[in-house]
Image (cartoon, rainbow, N blue to C red; front, side):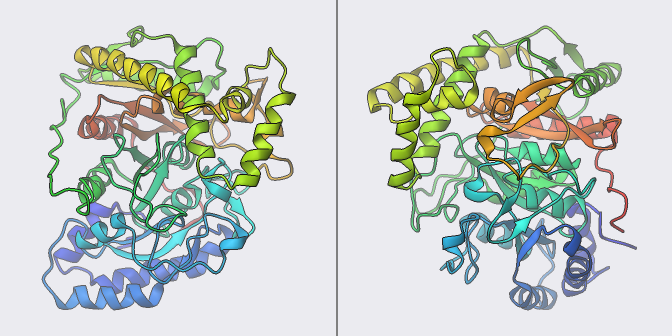
Length: 479
């Protein structure tokens, strides 16, 4: 038996049943990482000694825990005691975390074995995963393409069978987009459902970040559910309150109510992506789901899109060094009055007053109520996770100068945040599931959006899609 591409839930069954030891399983993934990661550059921080000690301890104790013995990696930006959390910044090379992030503590309490950390872009602010500390991570489906960002190393490691489970973070698609680019399952939870202690460049940070969430990337929908159960719930430093998420609204296709938003006028989306989402909808309907391609929440899409960009700028610039923030304020004077690109909308919002932010936040909560009314009639909404399959590697020019060809139309790189952003602004849960391949041999996924705290519903819908579309397929050449 080759465990390389088995889902995490199955690996946990094998270790709990004694069919394979925790240390034996860990050594398998370590050996794969040492043998194969040179061509991928995904697992950039390796903590093998600690992981081996933990695996030995698990082998000597009771065989319990939903993730018992599962070897996993985590995004480089999560604190792992004694290891760097650079966020891709060269001047943080010498940083050493004092303790594990809360999410890691919870995953290990569930039985997981963390053996390393995976690559990210600088400041977690790109769909390319390269930085001056660790270099470039490539997509295991095609090394000329990016695995996405900012959880790009996470997705690459899972897709190539170097790790069995991952935890990433997402403010602008950083879980959803890499999962889509690499043919995986991902889940961005309801905002603040999973506390982010230990996922900050500021030691001891307690406030978290607007829009941002932490969540799993995996090879099956069931793995998403196991990981979410492990990391969800208030930080015990703040509260002893226990959160019980509502059960999924449907666990089979029959009775599942699905709205489909495959494309949006004015926002170019790759034709293959649109076609595969519509084909997925047809398969769901054939299996008994109620499907509509016209149902939409009642809000102005452009307003929601721009609202996201302004709130994103506030969240993003809050962690900027003073000099960089001052430089950004200076750039505002160079904008053309008619420039409505994503970068321009964000730049105009830089330095807004608190009163202005409060007005945006009020509009955001009104938008959430529109989504709430929509989800009285529909369980999930399917839409693209991103406008294209995996982008080519693009490191020769700055982020704001990049242009992408989408079906013959030139689109500014930062405008591609539309599909992650128009969903993310409302702080709703969203899962990603693979639904097929492009003609060029790159995976395509779908974004599955659900109601506030409807995380179990979006993951259950991902499991239904897994059944009708086939789920994860290993990329060739990584055996």
